[in-house]
Image (cartoon, rainbow, N blue to C red; front, side, top):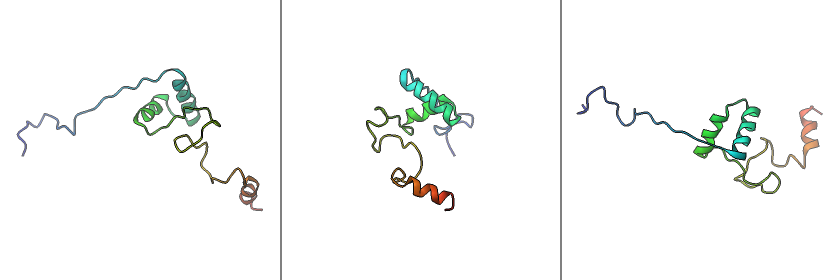
Amino acid sequence: MSDQPADVPTPFEQEIRASVTVSGTRAALLRDLASVLGRTPESLAVEWAAGSLVIPTAPIGESFGPEDWGLFDGPEDLAGRADEYLREGLGE
């Protein structure tokens, strides 16, 4: 048994509140991304602040490395084999 009264929350039960403010071009990017994904800009801002959503710092095409976004989920060789993949998808 604990020495604490029953009505006092334990450290694991205590609530944590956080606030994220994003402005400028990063905020505009998050708003645009949210509208495309059908999500709220606030939820994406929280993910960005937590480090689970990476926003590229350079324009697409200038820098593309593991830290940047992937534009789609698909095979890495899609650009070179697009016709072949399309034929497979059409059952040819």
